[in-house]
Image (cartoon, rainbow, N blue to C red; front, side, top):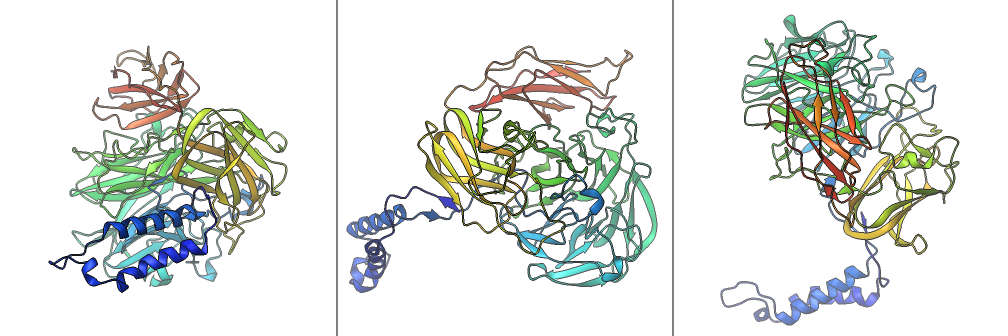
Amino acid sequence: MKIIRSFFPLSISSIWLFFFFSKLKKELPRSLFFNKKNKEIKPKWLSISIGASLIFALNTTNICYSQQKTYCNPINIDYGYCPIPDFVKQGKHRATADPVITFFNGEYYLFSTNQWGYWHSKDMLNWKFISKKFLRPEHKVYDELCAPSLSFVNDTLLVVGSTHGKEFPIMMSTNPTQNLWKELVHQSEAGAWDPQIFWDKEKDELYEYYGSSNLYPLYGMKLNRKTFQPEGERFPLLALNDDEHGWERFGENNDNTFLQPFTEGAFMTKFNSKYYLQYGAPGTEFSGYADGVYVSENPLGPFSYQSHNPFSYKPGGFARGAGHGATFQDSYQKYWHISTIGICTKNNFERRLGIWPAGFDDDGILYSNTSYGDYPTFLPSENKNHLNQNFAGWMLLNYNKPILVSSTLGGYQPNFAVDEDIKTYWSAKTNESGEFLISDLGEKSTVNAIQINYADQDAEFMGKPEKTRGHQYIIYSSFDGKKWKKEIDKSKNASDIPHDYIELERPFSARFIKLVNIQMPTGKFALSGLRVFGKGSGAKPDAVKNFVALRSAPKIKGERRNVWFKWQQEQNANGYVIYFGKSPDKLYGSIMVYGKTEYYFNGLDKSDVYYFKIEAFNNNGIGPASEIRKSE
């Protein structure tokens, strides 16, 4: 839904004009509309009249609908609330993780942890939730479903949840949009934690991959094609090697090594006759939570570590973390990767979901493009190159800019709403209509899109409510902070939209943005991020100078899994993006850094040569990239 300027109310005369010209074609002589070759023509006077009528009608309409071309992470779905009592002692909150998407019979299907149902969508933007319990009454677990497997065999969608026992069913559906499911297997002997059932279409064979542990490896086994039960022995396929792979080490900065790292979330993708076994590490609560991949010519190995790893990685920016996910194809056969984003404030398992453009390069290297990955990103398109054409180019306009609010609850300070950290948030004292936040963009800017990220302060729900009140609000713009114009009106919204993202059909100019609360589904009016995207009126940053990557040389005693980046402050920069890789033409990894001129990166592979570059960005755009630096 898009809001456009209204000059006049919709009048009876404008409606009459529209229908008059619509009927006119039927009543006037046929010769006015068809030439001698029986091809349709339109008289100029009629085209002008109809065009004028339509323009008049559109200009008198308050609300119009159009298909957005972009989305913004975290994705905007009606996340359920944590259902586990021990996990909500610091406050009830939304939570999910461990997602998987598959494109099946013309729609995308999305399953994730503990949602008591699933979503489906035709466009990867508008997701409709279907409530469904997949377990039987005797199972008596909170995890409905935890880290589910979602896949299909021919015309049948398959779902099974995580379990340490052998009693869970495998469910099947040929019509999941209608919520029509039945048991394929009553009790799966292949029950496992973080399972994935993989159908090798070319061979018509079934396999299951699974595991979640900081002690045991990931396993794989073949399933009988008819019974879907295990066939033969299970094989250990991969284990973490954090002595070599820095990013696999435990901790927020891969340095809190009091505990061994976890590997989990096995997921298989087949591409050009090769098998790509993906896995998450080192822990879901960390910003560096990532997905790596091993490759083999056989479904049960042996597997070799891909040169580019982790392939899905996002330790910086607003939405951080890109681990325990799934790779899928869209309606144009392009690849994407969905994964887990960490909030982890009220509990380590407070999380959201993000979708990143992905693909395989000419050398068969699997990548996921998370550069500017929480800025507006183009939805699936036939002609987009996922390495460099998915970012819409709209910049964040209000990072750390001045804020004015109606009230503040305790230490939940106003600037937490614009500090680009999803873990912090501002909260008003109430959820009452009229609570507001005003963001000063600092200069007259063009606004293309707005994302509203709500936080859970004093929420009352657990699990997935059957029905909730919608988020309702109004957004105004102003040039002087005194005279306000209504730009977006969702005062009648009935949908649960915790990370609402609005791409404006008609961008507007403003210096101030005012968000006014009308209604919350539960809890106080609280925001982890009011994020305004577009273009400012100033200059882009220049190239970053004096960029260095300090790392121990191969034959010198030191920690080669770590590198210390330093650079000179670019005076016009709001932040920087560092790119890294093992080849100068494959800098697929990226790290977004705000407000600093150094970064400690502890995610390198010890034995390998690396290449790095950096670029600065601000509200006006992205500056030139630096020269590429090599580190032996």
